[in-house]
Length: 94
Image (cartoon, helix red, strand yellow):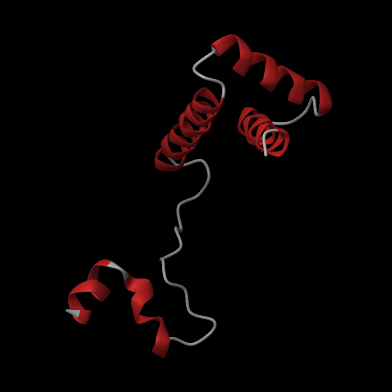
């Protein structure tokens, strides 16, 4: 049973692993590759969906939250703005 679980959940094998070893392999794809661009798009859509859930699917409110963060940091990327909006929403709604 343990070998079955460790095949699906590699972190269960961590008892014999040294401190410096990684559980998940690191990607070696450059930032400009098509796969990283699709990952960025999926990250953006996941961040937007997170905001949708928090705002009750009110797109106007989502846009206002993002624009507020843009006024605080005009040079930030869209992902950074959405992350900041999520963090602010979570901090204010504890």
